[in-house]
Image (cartoon, rainbow, N blue to C red; front, side, top):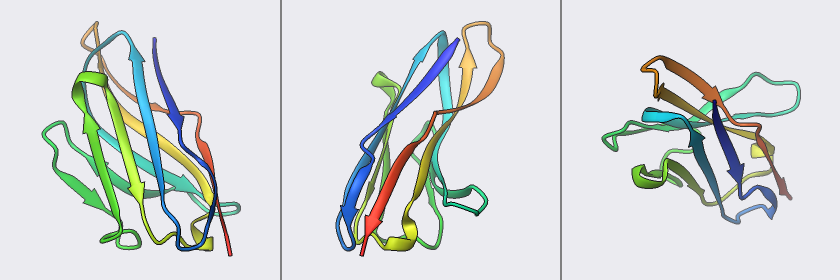
Amino acid sequence: QVQLVESGGGLVQAGGSLRLSCAASGNIFRINNMGWYRQAPGKQRELVATITGGGDTNYSDSVKGRSTISRDNAKNTVYLHMNSLKPEETAVYYCNAEVIHTTFRKYNWWGQGTQVTVSS
């Protein structure tokens, strides 16, 4: 079994910053890509940023230049730091990881989500 646990969400004022964390635990052999996605009310889940095991990153155009995704492979943890937040970025933020289980099967795991509310 694998778990992804997010933390760091909450209420932030427009223009402010936040740092999300997501720690993976369980029967993990290796984690390949990790990423952050978000889903606003009434909208589809969308990509925010991803990072490979080697540290290559990819950002959505909407957050590029004011967000940084990083990871600590020793801790199986991925982080997302976002600046200059906008009210329209209010959403539930989900962590995602491509996990190689100790049985060597590959799974795509999601965290339970953390609410981020940006007030105007």
